Length: 330
Ligand SMILES: [Fe+2]
Image 1 (cartoon, rainbow, N blue to C red):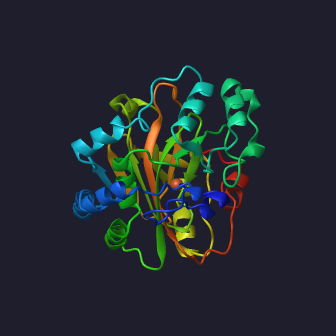
Image 2 (image 1 turned 30 degrees about the horizontal axis):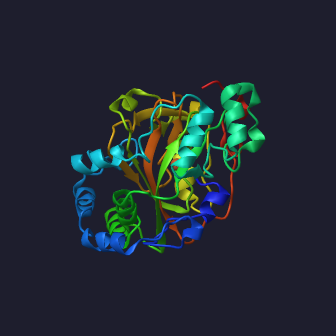
Image 3 (image 1 turned 90 degrees about the vertical axis):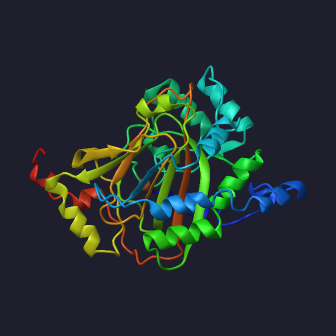
C-alpha cells in the first residue's frame, strides 16, 4: 500500500530489537530477553519457505505462500487476546476495546486518524468529509476506514515473531529473493483495518522496495468477506500506463479509478502471505465492506523502504487519462 507523508516518516518498529517505552516499543525484562535469545531460530522456517516459493507472474510478479506460519504458530497467533477480540456491541465499544489492547490509529492511505470523525462516518455515511483524507485518493474515494496498529506486544511470542520479521535475517532473505539492491530498511507491524478502508488501484510508491502482507484472520469465514487485497491488470485501453511508468522512473505512480482495471485475483486465504516488489505493473487495491464488530481484517503488514529514490515528479491520474478528454466510455 501507499504511505501517507506521515506514515513514511513514522517507523516505530523499524529494524529495532528493543527500544525505549517512550516511542511505543516495549523494553524487555531479563527473563524475556533470555527467552528471545533462546528462540532465535524458531522462525527460520519462514525464510526457507520464502526461498522455496515459486514466483507467480500473473497479474504481476509476486510470491504467494499459503500456510505461511506453521499450524502451531498460526494457532498461537490467533489465540492471542490482542489478535482475536470478542464481538463488540458497537463501533464505540470496538474502538475502546482495541485501544485497551494496545492499538492506536495509524496514518494510512484510505484511512483517517480521527476516531471521532470515523465513528461519525460509521453512523452516518453522509458525514463523509474527503478533506479528512491525507495524501492520495482524496478525489477518488467515497469513504474511509481506520487502521489500528498494535503498539505494544503483551505476548512474548508475538513480540518475538514481529522482531524476527523486523530483523536482519528476514531483511537479508527478502533482499536476496527479490533482488533488492540499494539501502533499504524494514518495517513490519500488526494491524487491524476496519470497515471502509479503501485504496484505489495503484502500484505503490517508488519509495517501497517490497510490500508483504500476512492474513491472520481469527476465523476462516473471513476468507469469504469483502476484505481482501485485489491484484489487478489495467484494461487494454489503459495498458499504455505500464510503459509510461516503466520508462519514466522519475515520475511518481498514482492512484487510478477502479474502472481502469480488472481484478485478476484476491489474497483471501487465511495464514497466507503475498510479497511483491513494487514496480510499473504491480497494480493492487483494496476496499473493505464488512462487519468489523464480529472480527477484523488482521494483518501482519510490512515494507522494505528505500532510503532514497530517483522519483522527482508527482503526477495525478487525470494527467494520465488519455481517454477521458475524448469522452470515450470504456
Ligand atoms: Fe499498496
